[in-house]
Image 1 (cartoon, rainbow, N blue to C red):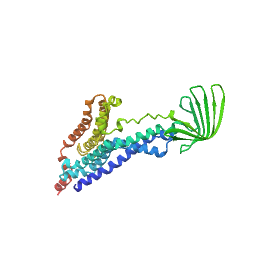
Image 2: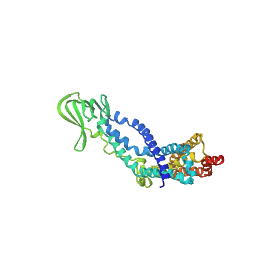
Image 3: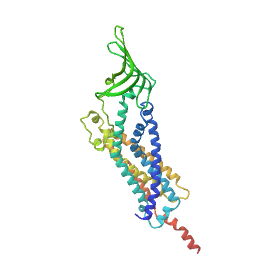
Image 4: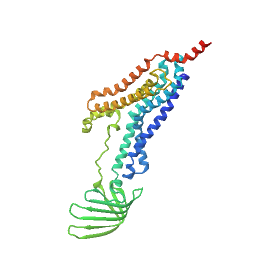
Length: 378
């Protein structure tokens, strides 16, 4: 790679990295706000919250990458063009393709990174996140008790705890259970903790008592140092983790197990997601080409390129929204998956046509004009 190519690549690489970090930070902030439920309602630790947030990052990065490439390319190319560095490149005999090749190589590299993340990193991260959310949702310690509130985790069962610490220990516990035969039992304990005994979930209560009213109205009172309350009825042991299309690898999307009822009913959804995984990285190339078209696709202007940038920005938004609409439509008609590839490819082709229809001589004349004037004056 020649010196001028490395220079142009460096001018583009820095803004792309900064724009990616900035947009990912904004997307991550929205993700953390929606995930605060894990701490507020599910009483999970900050470490679990951070883990779930970080596992969502691969998809967030893939979503913001085309936007980051487009915005960063516009900023870098606009500066290079207004400072006439690109004009000097044309005046030095560089072809139009030679000038844009560093930007396109960068876009292809970003697209390859996005493809790898789509095919392997995102499914692995989302599977782990789905398993973590499943463990949180089935965590009896968080669903059974809410600090300072009376809860009904099951019909006929009322639970109250005055305090719940970070380790899951319950303080001043109250449980009232109404049985099917009409009897009722009330448990009180100073301390309690959810644990497992012989493979079953149990609530271990210490330093407490229980009062049982039989159907005949007889009260039985008992104190205990330790009492084990069986929670098997509250545990959904037969529930399994269900992987959504975003959690599946490419071969699972293209070749689902049609023996499974859910996969058979959602076969077109899985197929559309699989094609989207492959087609989405193409938007990085398309948006880079559109940014190049906004700056290089027209004549040189000392007044700036605000109008062209605004038009191309609106076109980029339209192209990306159209891509989302095509993906949604492909969930009903399989043949529309072809359009998932055609949308970014057509956008790239139109942008290249705009770039190469301009005459390079226009830039060369501008660059040589001062020398021509000086020669005439002599």
